[in-house]
Image (cartoon, rainbow, N blue to C red; front, side, top):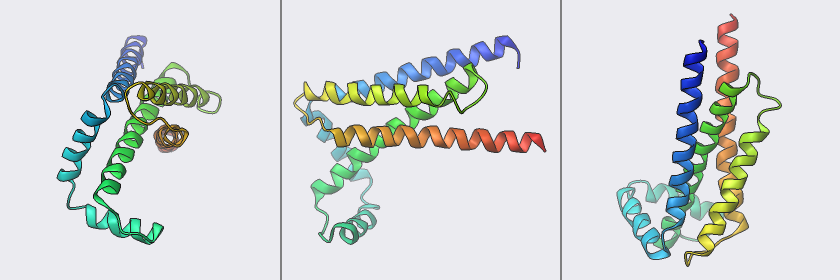
Length: 162
């Protein structure tokens, strides 16, 4: 890969990282009413999966799932997905900046954790709840995104070696 291509890719992933972080913080800047309205729109579009999620919820908790529980599930899933995206983009950026995974995986993990903490801090000022369990959920999403990229990286390296 030429230096020009590598510079372009690093710039692209840097921009995508900034856009992803701005998206996450943008959602956090919404007040609770606006946030729940958006969750309702998404939940109404996912009515087909509600029985499956409800059945799983009942098996795990022993209680039937309410409409509130389904909306909360949608909200938590959205946070998890946002941070999968962030973790994946950060890991790709890291891989293009440096060659190798072992010592570099900590930077995407640290940045993802920092964004998750700041995200919850922002929410505390927007009439929304801020909880450590949400930070753990966000960080778990980022960790999942990072692991997916690392696994893909190892698979690609192994295939190229053959």
